[in-house]
Amino acid sequence: MAALRGLLQRPLASYYLLLACVGLLLVIGLVMVFSATSLTSYTDTGNAFADVLKQGTFALIGFVAFWFCQRLPVRTFRGIAKPAIIIAFLLMFLVDALGFAAVLAATPGETPEPIHLGPVHASQLWLHLGPVQLQPAEPAKLALVLWGAQVLVTKGPAIANLRDLMTPLFPVTFALFGLVGYNDLGSMLCLLVAFVGLLWAAGVRLRVFLGMFVVALAGVIGLILMPGKHFYRVERLVVFFDPSRADRADGAYQYFQGLYAVAEGGWFGVGLGEGHLKWGRLPNGHNDFIFAVIAEELGVMGCLVVLGLFAVLAYTGLRIARRVADPFRRLVAASITIWFVGQAVINIGGVVGLLPITGLPLPFISDGGTALVVALTAAGILLSFARAEPDAARALHARPPRRWVRLVWAPLPPLPRSRPDHERAPKTGRSG
Image (tube, rainbow, N blue to C red; front, side, top):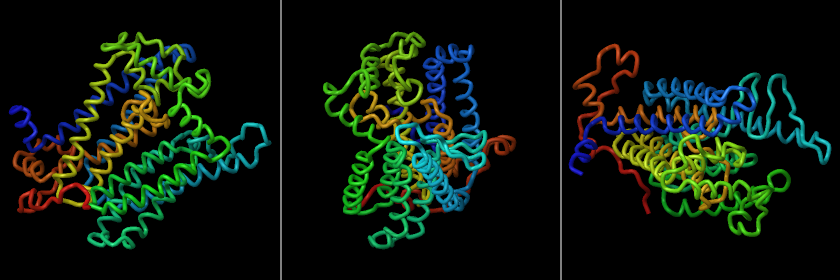
């Protein structure tokens, strides 16, 4: 314990913990995506590496975004916050509007055909911009974190007044919830988790959380009961609360297959690449249910490794939030951390039957290009903040890396003020 305590007391401990944690999760993700998709990729294309190469391409794009963001000063993130939330709104409105127009134009009883606006069209949760395909709900998460932190920091002590706190933060945020939740309730819940993390880190009063909980609960119930193609949400709740009454060949199929995979894996799994899920037994085994593949092939021990990495990620992110002096960095670090961990809990809880299935990917691990690129971008922002911790900045200036390292990887962070960190950095938490 003394040795571990000594390591954690090093100035750059947060930086290296975060770098190692994200790197290991990414490697595990690529390995498990290959294991989950190799058979279907070979059957469909004749190349067992087709899907993992595609995911590797997105990982490379995400690494470039990660590298770029960890070089940037905090003023850049504050400057792009407002444009980011505007772009997120436009993209979400576009995908919802095109989807709704397709439903109106479709003949009753037939599958709606996508409506094209030149090279642009929408398909369920996806927006197609010519050859580029993206899921707008993913960048909306990061946009909300940056913009919400900027609004809260700008208001300062005024957030103690409920009216000042609500305008414009709550109307804009709940409008974004509605746009995202119309097509993707899981991503809306993830947005809610990130938003709660922002308010908690800002020290917002408990009564605000209680009021927001009531409004959010009413909104979620309304989205769940929405008729039409969204009625599957009710079916998922029925499966969760009473699996014995659900049809195992229909609505509960994925639920039970995930539980079977966890049971078959035992303590040490059936072996990497030896699982049976890749034979088409589990829909979305490479994406939403990749934790079931991990459980089957690597067993309880493999699951504990993944859970341990997310626990380290949670500790490191909140450690960064507690140590940085700048309030914007503190809010963003706490919100990104709670977003990652909350999304992982929702995903894993759905796989093992502790929560309803939402369709959320497991951060850094599930197959999915937009989600991976956005997650790595957010991790790069966290890494930038880790280097800005007062002790880390002083250590880097005291023994600066070689010039070529600073040019290729990241420049030196600004030195903090002379006052000690514990006297300047507000604690992360909420007031009663």
